[in-house]
Image (tube, rainbow, N blue to C red):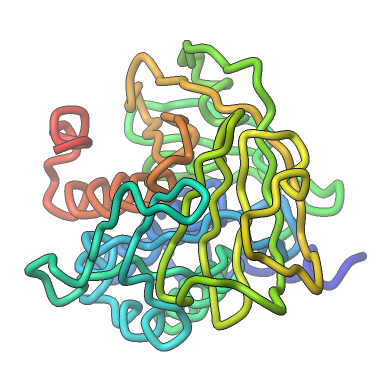
Length: 327
């Protein structure tokens, strides 16, 4: 048996024994949204159990941008200072065409103490959140899958699977933070209507030998047939993204690439659930809404969903989740 599977099963047993008559909320999904939900609930004294069917944090950079409202939101948990220590501050955004600047946005002019975009690979963000959650006494149960659940009069009964071993647990509610292909959403029968663009976009994490712009500046270059952008994550390193399936087919003017790391391609989809809550189920993050990555809002919106839900649950005002979710 995989050691992480043994740990996940042990965590389920330990959690139930420790809580006795206290039924925990079950968070499904160990990405930034699920981790934020669990951390904010634990910080407020709510019992919580969080699972993920992967065996560890994502090794890929994925979502990069952390915005000021998210940093504000995570201050109370002590996470913000850790993110700031680990991340890279983007203080300017420039749009140009063959070196001629069309638009310049100095973020440092914003009247806020976090007057920048913090660039940090999602893998690092997840690790920081996981460590902070562990300090509250809650461990993320990796290698554990939600097989099924049903809503009862006062919560839910869920069947969890780790290394082909099933265990039935009680939960105060099931929080689906398990991404665009959410099992929670599908089992709850909540529709996820929308559409996808036919065009493929590409991205690549690159190391640069030469680059004509400062590394505190995110740059978008207009091409004859589209756009290519560079988001710095450190001095000499960052994310290339373009409206071509292979991002490296559109190298920005003046860039000399020495090394290529993670690459991926994707289609932009726009989808929204019909409701964020049904019976014992609450949805947050990509399980509830997906959209263009422009502006880097996806992860930030998911974490805001999670923090809002945690606060309302703690206040006994969870019926307000639907009306407050995007305010």
